Length: 170
Image (cartoon, rainbow, N blue to C red; front, side):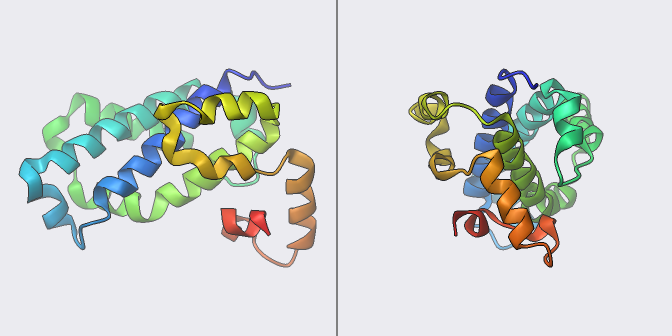
């Protein structure tokens, strides 16, 4: 139904999201994030946002439409375009806000996509054995599409968008 090529785009986006959080975790505010370490963490994060936006353009539209968590994918791609073509015009407060709020929804949407793709365990492990995806080891326990459907039934009284990966592991 969906191309398995989507996995590489999804894994790359997830790794970039994890790195955005790693690079920003030691900061309490936008100003410090922007100006500490000669802007190293800011510049690395901006590059990760470019990769996230670029990879989001490659995911099958049908897969984007079939997930429960609704994401404005055009906005994700748009951030990439804005950063790429107007580097000095990046609003650091918006970037900080996205890191600390919106990326959680994107991560959950991407995890849901993996469950819909339902890759063979061997393929999943092949990706996760790569050093490039070392921050994604939690995906080794990702449920398949049938398990996810059962989780939705169990949590029918809870808004699906609030289900976290920890909820899925239970």
